[in-house]
Length: 167
Image (tube, rainbow, N blue to C red; front, side):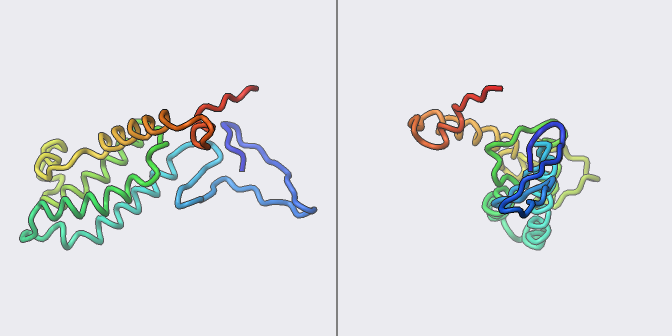
């Protein structure tokens, strides 16, 4: 697979056996596409997080479970599933909207509200008492950048970050 704005075919072979060219590649549960966009990756993350949310639904909807317990479930299971490998994401408004929609679906379930109740997202977030996922992602990306800048120049991540490509 070649990551480029313009797709092109390559004929690469090893010992005369041609390698198959693909438009998507999954590695460590992340999807890489040949156009370099994150749409498929975010869609997959949202699907997995929605699946977790549905599995947690009996606990999140139960009126006798305290909201603090629900928040611990959300923070320890749902958020990591939704934001796996988020440090390198470059989010567009439409991708941010998909992530926020998924988050709000789970949070509304935790406070036993629906969209028909016409409660603003920020009010729902305050009712649950969590940090919005987009703020969490932004804060963690800044933290990762700080870690990256403190690495010694000979370390692999620092080399990759500081690499100058010509041509």
